[in-house]
Amino acid sequence: SYEALVRITANAEWKLMQNSPYSPLELYDLRQDPRETNNLAARRPDLVRDLSAALRAHIQRGGATPWQPSASASQGKKK
Image (cartoon, rainbow, N blue to C red; front, top):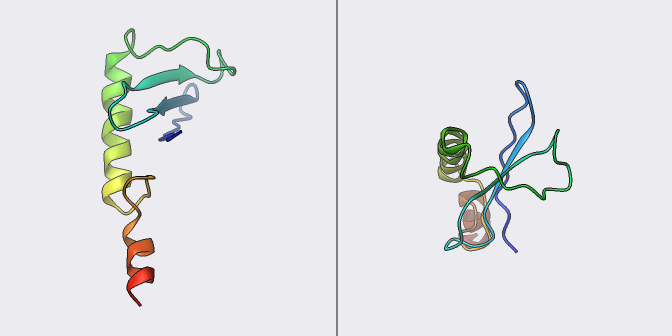
């Protein structure tokens, strides 16, 4: 499954993930919930919004996703 991962370690460590481009985002507090059993996305829309923006920026800078290879990987295939 696809797992987009963005971690912020200011006060806690958070994980934002999505199993496919069509599934909802999931948010976990890895410090309090290391087994990722409590999806906090509905309770923390502010954090989901901020981490989603960071994830989009990462992908736009060339970060890879399974359905969209990074720019550097695509360039390597063309050579």
